[in-house]
Structure formats: C-alpha cells, structure tokens
Amino acid sequence: MSHAFRNLLRKIGSGPQTGENLTRPEAALATRLMLLQEATPAQIGAFMIAHRIRRPTGEELAGMLDAYEELGPMLTAIAAQPVLVLGIPYDGRTRTAPIAPLTALILATAGQPVLMHGGDRMPTKGGDPLILFWQGLGVNWTQLSLSQVQPVFEQTGIGFVYLPTHFPLAQGLVPYREQIGKRPPFATMELMWCPYAGNAHVVSGFVHPPTEAMFQTAFALRGIDTFTTVKGLEGSCDLPRERTAIVGLGRGDQLERLHLHPRDFQFEAKNVALDSVEHVIRQMKDALDGHPSEFMQSVLWNGGFYLWRCGVSPSVEAGIADAERLLMQGQVKQTLQTLRQAMAPMTVSGV
Image 1 (cartoon, rainbow, N blue to C red):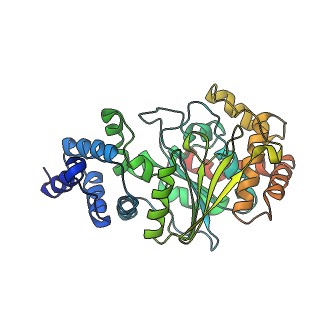
Image 2 (cartoon, one colour):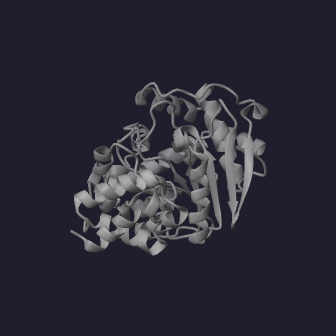
Image 3 (tube, one colour):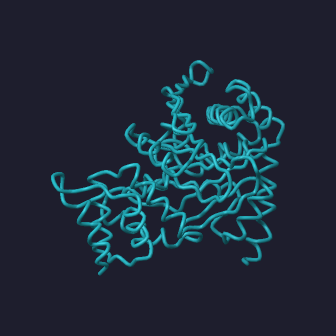
C-alpha cells in the first residue's frame, strides 16, 4: 500500500465538510502513483470514484496533465506552425457519425498538421472509437510503434497516439472505468492532453459547461496560449447540425464565445446517424470521391470551420469553399493514399 497515496485519497474522499481539493503538485503525484501502479487497486478505484463524485478542479487537471507529460509518449516537433491536437472522448460514439478523420485529412491536405489520440472500445460508454474508422479507411495506427508514427506524421501531417501501444501505463487504468461504472476525471483530462513536444493548438470537446471552465483554468496554469473548446457531437470536436455550435476561442487568459448557426451556412439538418461502423466508412469513402450526401455536408461544415480556425482560410465561408474544392479535386483522397503508402512498409514488415 502507498501511504503517500492514502493521504491524498483521504484529502479528496473525506466528504463535503472536511474534504479538500488537491494542489497541482498533489494531483500530479496522485496521477503518477496510479499510472505506475504504486497505489493498490483498492486505492486507485476509491480515488477515481471519490474524485468523480467531488469533481476535479482546473488546478487538479493541470497536475494530472503534468504527470501525463512526464510519463507519457511525446511526438517531437515537425513544424514551426502549431499542430492541431483534437481531444475527443476515448469512449467513442453511439449515436452520431464521427467526422474528425475526414476533417484531419482536409486540414493535412491544406498544409495544417493534425494529431489525434485514443484507444480501443472503452467503458463505460463502449462506443465506436476513431481507430475503427481509420482502419476502415485502410489506415491501421495500431500496428505502429511511436517511433514509426513520427516519420508518418512528418511526411503526411497526420499522426495518432494509440493508448494500448504508445502509453501502456494509461491503458493499465482503463479496466477501472468498467469496475467503478463511471467516467473518472481522467476522461476529462484526456480531452486536454497534448502528446506533442512542439507548438500546439489543442481543441477540446465537451458536453457540460462547467467542464469548459475547468479547461480554461488548466490551460492557463500550463501556459497554453491558444486553444479551442467545442460543445460538439457526443462531447467531441465535431460541429453539430441540429443546433447552434457553441465554440470557445481561447487566446491567453481570454475566452471569446462564438455561436455558429448551421442555418446561416445552409447546413441545418439532422446529424448523420451512426447506424453501423461499416455504413459510416462507406459514407466517408463516398465523400472522398466527391459524392454529394448529408455526410458530405457535415464534412464541409466541419472542414470549413477548422480551416478558418487554423488560419488557412480567411472566413468560415471561404473555408467551406476550400474544403469542397479539395474534396472535389481529389486532393483529400490523395492525402489518404499518401498516408497509406507511408505506413505500408511498416505494417507489412511488422517491424
């Protein structure tokens, strides 16, 4: 048993009257002890559920990120420009089709590097993770070591940090999510995680407004100057089409609120449903071939916004037009082909 961890557990688990928040160093220590399994399973499970009930603070999230930075994987810098890091819930999607893989391909085609991260199907939601959709597009990130992801990232402008292979310490905590039956605060922290050593622009999806305030505090403590928050589909970075997209544009310690109304851009409609992984992959391939569909409309809506947010296009309207041009001219499909080719020697050889 870790006596140091027991003291931290007592601090957050003492109830509303005597319980206390952890300091940033204490949160980092607690996370480190859990990742290294120096805390016992009983201690880890108790901490996760106590922290879930009490809710984390922005300072605690900053400390958790400090530990991830210390012990986790890190891709080295590939460009002077900021890399867009998409923070999407690891427990996947159950209702709406994910758009992020095609958003990443559009951005990379336009010269904007993108980094994603996640794992396999994960409790408690057990939704379809992004890794399945990439595999359906012929891109299998699960077969690459971190040292192999690096040159692919450099060559194509697209990277993926896969938890089971690249961060087994964090993967070791996943079973606790099933055992406690709730998302622990780690699930919130993952939306902010940046496994990249260079200049980054982190985009964090969220569902509940208080989460956004915690993001802002944690980013400020960690000196993150540029970030974006998105109240997206199922907590992801994907813009909705059935309602106004609520976006936070973070610059320093300021958060500018942006409300994007899909109807103002002729995109108002039902969100594309996730009826099966296979069907969504077919829709992704059709969009890459330039075939019109509601899925293609969602791709243009998201691609246009992110091209503008990254400074590639001067406005959202221009970004939508640019995304459509890149898709219709086959350039985005060519980026996917380049990505497959960059990975092929590594996956075939199994090195």
